[in-house]
Length: 518
Image (cartoon, rainbow, N blue to C red; front, side, top):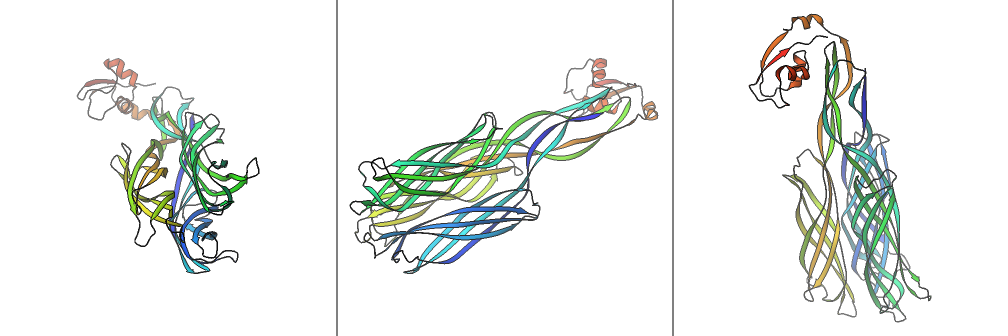
């Protein structure tokens, strides 16, 4: 006899680690840049350069790229900008990690504080939240049927299994060219830009994964021929395709996607004038493709003419509880602090979702955090034409997940779907935003798997001692399989002798059992 099996490819989480990385660095102004007078706005982005898994450790190399917009009295318009990079290397301890394991690394910029130390030096302070999830991808065999067995009774059971059809990392280049509106002057120099991809959605198709979203672009530049500050803001849809041969439109797709760095430059149009904005970025994508399968698995077996001893082991499988994309409105008002210059015109409003806490609750997942917004605006003062304000919009949102339990595992991605600002007065603004929550929830189930079946001759002395005919009253929890196996008969024979319907049997029913010998 031989066990026929079916294969199940799945991800096994081996360990997690999390740490915080702090920066406290001095950054000297390059010689070609004008002196600092005051800081207007700063922004930062984390870029992971290398991830390496070794025994017991995950090593991560990356850098923090920061940009500042500042007042500079030596230049004509009184505004300049600066970019800088601070590198980091961190090692996380994950005892279960092995050399060929996979690691999902995420790094969130929790806080960025840039201060002017003197006219030629900056103090850069940042707090990074660095986490790693170490996993391995394994193909396991589960018993489906017994081949070559004669006179054998078999009990199959239906199990729901989540089969990992494909997983991987890929990247797509985003290249867009944006024409300036006719009422905007030509571009002499780009001083400041903010680029963000919003509303990412991924859909599986035959042989590919389709990724769609919207890129929001804001740019401050010096116009020509009249040297003055100009602002342009626009949004453009993007649609990308990842080649994944295993993909099928019926699969379940879960994607993490982000652009770590954008390159924004001015180019000449067909008439030779600098009126085109060239936008380039690399969208890095991590994807998983799942298929929910309902399989018949061998649960138990016995024979009347021999003894079969199944060797079992406990194993945990997962099935998909829910994949959901939900949205939460986060609105609030923002008031300028005392001493800040009043608003003449709003240039841009950018933001990101910062998650502080997630928790499994009854029928859902509680997500708490804030939407961090940055607003750049023109003032009424010629000596300081630009200023900025930052704010935090707190939220507490429950993602509905019916039947979720504390032992469930989930992955949650957040993003900004919509962000807008409206002036209510020269010192007050109304912020409206919509936060995205993309969650996938896995429910574990522990089952017993038959690894092998040992066959030995039947114990005829034991069989002879068993009565040939037995009367039995059905008790709570009794099944025909249990009764037939314990009394050396078959389900078919019990039904034939007693003219029984299908299970469940009413409690208290009396049945007659006839021992079967082959």
